[in-house]
Image 1 (cartoon, rainbow, N blue to C red):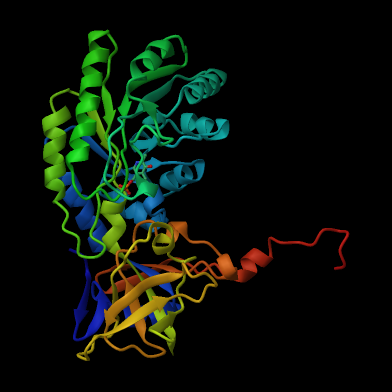
Image 2 (cartoon, rainbow, N blue to C red):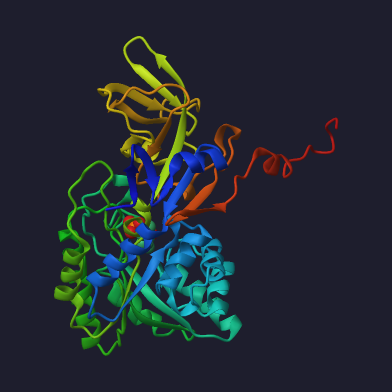
Length: 419
Ligand SMILES: *Cc1c(COP(=O)(O)O)cnc(C)c1O
């Protein structure tokens, strides 16, 4: 499943002991396995064999340049949601014609950046956005290639904060309105709507909602074509889940089958935007125990990673598997694994059965490759921690620690205060 395994009792990333990396870069740090990234990409690409498919990795899941380049070399493009992510995707070597731009709040400057770069499509999410794209394209003397993101009003059965395909969510244009919006857009001289896009949510662990959504897309394509609108592109989004805590998730091949059965015969060029599936289990966050504290009712392992490094448990109540970096045969005991930040939400696990830990021990928080480092902050004036990529027996720091001094250098006193 991934490349974080024990070798003679030591947890390795591929062939590198995580303890060795900890000695070299300090803790906490993120560690990614290139082999896992590559394997996950191939599994997904293979699931789409026979389809005219471009895999546009969702950069917001992990935007590290080395991770992006790893994927670019396998033929991946990118799904970006900001001008910053577009800059990263291009800097990593992703070809512009494999980049799609999603998101509900693109600014004029971001639209201009996309048009100048000549990306594959801008996924428009509202009528005001279509007007903005048209205005910017006209100023630049260009025609914008656009797909219209529709909201299929399908329940993805995932966490409320990561479901996006219900009509109460802010994403896309209601699918019932898409027909009229596209008809109206015919008058926009500098926008060419070539297709539809859909993305119903994230960490989806049963695939039937995809089928429901893609059937809506299919119906809409039929209606539009009947009206003489040429639909040549479909962007089916991302959203496939990964196991965080032993969940049973169908293989991506089943997803591919659903795609074939629903839209496979429409003759459209397809784009996909997986993020989590590609990098989720390709990363761990390694942390060191600072103290073991016996509270009134339970034991706490206080570690040097915190919610600012990995926000998912605090934000989504996410449960990440936590394992010792040095395996022991001692009987597990229950412990809460918490960070040092002054928030009760700064908790990685409650009542976790873990072999006894002591100060100085290393723990690995698993499945932290997606929505981990990218969501980190400097809350409590903590550093942005290093990111390390492993390939075989080699490892390299792919983002250096960004320490407090960098931030202090950007702060200044107003001139009415004493210096
Ligand atoms: C977040 C997002 C994705 C990626 O979702 P995953 O669950 O990581 O696959 C893809 N497309 C859009 C539009 C998104 O917002």
